[in-house]
Length: 437
Ligand code: SF4
Ligand code: SF4
Image (tube, rainbow, N blue to C red; front, side, top):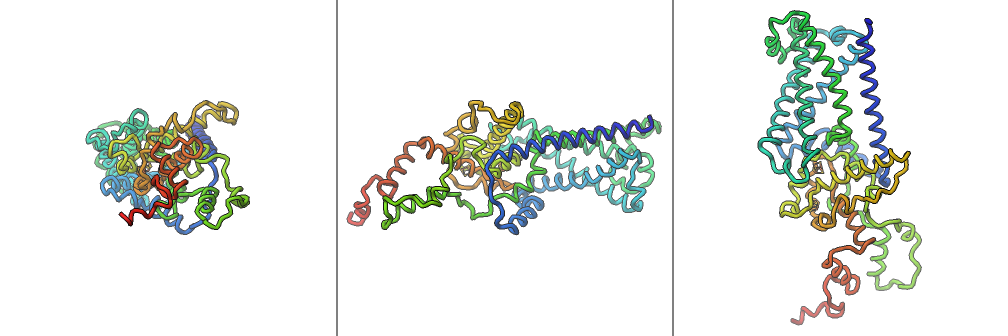
């Protein structure tokens, strides 16, 4: 019986980490449904982006208030979790504050004191975040694309963080030996008086309860990540690494189509010549994307990384002028469809069975796709280097090249370019007539 708590702790730990690992495996499998992308170029630039954008949060702080608060929550949360190492060792070996037997009291006190200050700062920041979301109702948090689960998810994670920080401080405040040490209890010394007058046994029970709930809460939080927009805590790093490093606004033209257009524009080209072998090899089985399997692995990673912050949508000119398009929704729809496909594969022994649905039409409408001005503002605004525009362009490519389903104005323009070499309906011979007017 003496080892019962240690055994229970080990079971919790193994179950928590095991379930998380299972979901990570599923996540990787789902991302691999997309086609591969060669990211072996610009290695040093990619690492620089990881350091600046993912670690340094350089794009987050472009909006100083939310950016600064986010940095506090991020840094605080990561650093405080160093304490979890001690909890895990204590839990497995039945020790109490193992750090004190390894480190000098002053160093241990400094560490825990820093964690306590960060915990307080995280608490304050999280409360401000909650107020911005639910009381002030900032526009990007009340958009029509952020109803139901995505809205609740944003709040749930804030509640999680509040509870975890409170448990950490209560655990310290009710730990009599830690309080008597008078080092490191920078914040908890002000909470300790709330428990004055309680017996040593009751204090011990409260401290143990907070300790257990804290570690169980962290394991639950870890497993909640897969179902939440907070996957970005982990995925922001690979996502930024694989992010766009080509010049802003550069599109990934199809080699085969480019070659054909060049041939068309070349006055010396032999119209009866057989197509070049390389161009033929480059012709894809399907032009553009109608479902998640047609997208690239980076685009699918983008979908899982989206924080649903809405910065993209708040800068989208189409959305601002009342169009149906929201780049945030494009990313959320892509993730939802990818999850649906993943569940389909799980239910059919690893094989995807056609469910009569697809990303195009069932999730994202033509109206949304054609509302995009391709201005790139969403890509520029995204704090974690997500590229909603590339998905929009791939789906438009499908509409144009596979379904000839472009709006009439575009079809007319494309026909004119093909026939007249210009978007206007005039014969090429008449193109300079304007100078005689
Ligand atoms: S590129 Fe399209 S989706 Fe992105 S901000 Fe511009 S109009 Fe909106
Ligand atoms: S795509 Fe980027 S900017 Fe848009 S909601 Fe997702 S994380 Fe935020």
